[in-house]
Length: 250
Image (cartoon, rainbow, N blue to C red):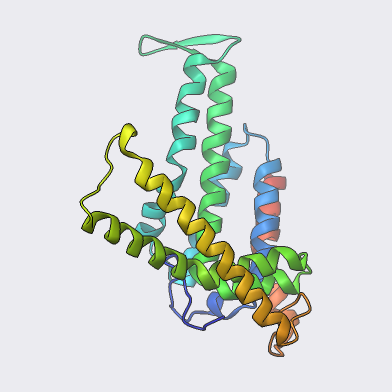
């Protein structure tokens, strides 16, 4: 896998968080997310504490707040769902600004909004401080089944190739004067998708045969890498431990 394959969410700031081993960051974010999920929705101070904690991690990692907020808009569909819950929910209702809102729906909306936002921000911080290659390597070191890490590795390696194939096919279609914009014009688009699938399948077979002929046994070789030091685990553990302390105190 080429070293140049990075992703748009990674910010190369070279800070202490960036230098941590990927597996310790993955475990820290996973444990933090578990703490957030099991926190009762009514514990409002706890959620405020989690947000302050993530802000501190972002400051240490030198990840701009505006950068995080822009990319956190990925959760907008869930926000719309949360907004609809108080209106269409059942059970006890209260009146607010002329609207009849469900109390159960309000709790559900807050639960989705608070926990979803914290989860998205934690994931963005992980992506901003860890390259995609290192994320896959970290999952491999954590003994995630090889089939998942191998699929992710090949997807990362060939996603640019597939995107380039799709771009060339679109240019070829436009050069022939066919630009489907309506439902009854999608035949060319459907044919293009089928052709791209066949090309990808055939390329995958050729690559697999080439790898087998070179000794591939189901696991890609990795260069020897250092094991994370105890202080790295201790440093990464501060995120879930502090969040657990916030939950207990709240």
